[in-house]
Image (tube, rainbow, N blue to C red; front, side, top):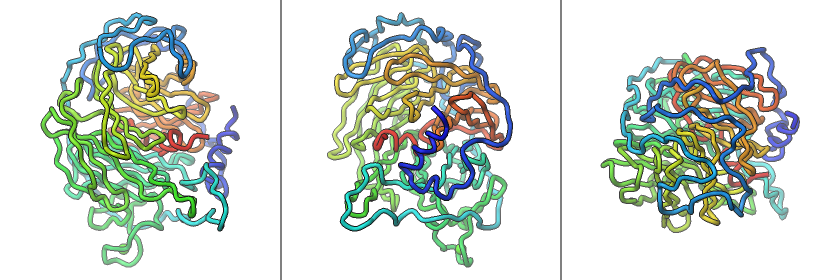
Length: 497
Ligand SMILES: [Ca+2]
């Protein structure tokens, strides 16, 4: 499909996106073109979070692990729940490494930097307003009008997050995420207004406004003072686009995901979005928190006692489904998938098959839960039938595009897989040699480009899913995000086309 189609998607859902956006999605500056190649390749890796690299190289793309469509699902395997060790028939599962493999939590380490600054720039239109024509029935696709497309990527050791314009590839702002600095920020989640929340692995949740119009003049200096780029990180007490910071001190705080909030039929907008957070302080109990998205105040907390694969960390990722229920997954082979219901805070725990070693998580437009698995297989869970399917592709961050392709950042390699989210066929593998470290985070932007973030160096790349053309932004500092970094994942799961 053509990019103009992507633009249409962007426009129909985020109506302002195409109106004034200027510039078309087609890239401008030349850059290297990634080539499609076989996934059977080296597995060198620098791994920080996953324990063990001893993985078997993944198979060739032809052999998709499994089969079948959405609901029925013969050839697959194991019943969701119990039994981790189910190997899944259709794919013999090589050596998954050991599920227990706690090594290394410590990703690099803190140290904040925080240059200082100057002031504003960046402006734009308004989130609210529009479409509230009286007495009219809301367009179900409305909600979350965005007139921009940003990707938010944490510079973990620096204690900052970068805001990159996905159309121009410019880093338009960089923010310190905790008042005390540091914190090892990692996962980011973006809501339907474009605002981001960041979880720091050492604790703390930070919300940053996407639009300068929302920022609050509060530092005593007239006008809005906010970062204007990577070399302009304002001191904590000067930056006015940080909406709120909620302090926590966790042993591990990783999973984070926005809900859409409730849809208001009168205003045709989503209101009162919440923030789900998964964390732990004792390596045994998982704390699931729910924060008010407007204020950062914690409104709910539940404790889920020791779940398999939990290790010393919190779940590695979170994503909401169409009911705004949150799904979190514990890393490592045979980990646990957890669903917490938005309406009553009850939860279910689901055993992940032993052949899947979970890392990233995403909910697709059909409601399936996808687990990026770092050992040979990636998994898809059907919540209705409680069944699993696997596909032979090992990876980390994962997200679906508007064409029903799951994009998976390859583990131990520099590349990305495209997988048909319905048939599970591996459609292609694109090498991304521009990335140092390994390809970790994957998010789709609102133009339909696939963004892939490495976990070392400073590079994020933007891939044209049709032509495989690649452009790189190289100004990051040890990026470490592999969640829904653009907000596309939330939109796709909750209000798919
Ligand atoms: Ca001010």
